[in-house]
Image (cartoon, rainbow, N blue to C red):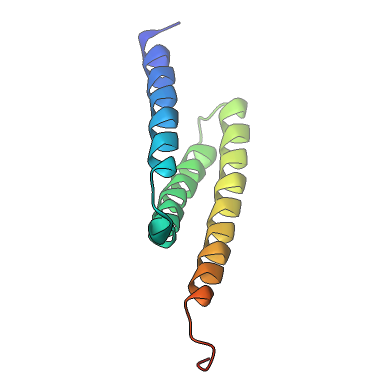
Length: 97
């Protein structure tokens, strides 16, 4: 394997462990802001995946993985907004609409 691929795999694994630790240590009061932040990160992922997928010289594997990334990141964004909306509704007073 080339050094670039090994470094990419290392960064991916490190980011996975770091993300897991970060999410586990978040208090329940901060879940709504955290969901908003993950929606922003997913939006960046969608833009990056669209750029990779639409590139003229991209291989077929890149196009397939880019399309899958667009699909999953879009699902993550939509579900994140739905969950955030539902969580915010829990804090509204019953008398107000």
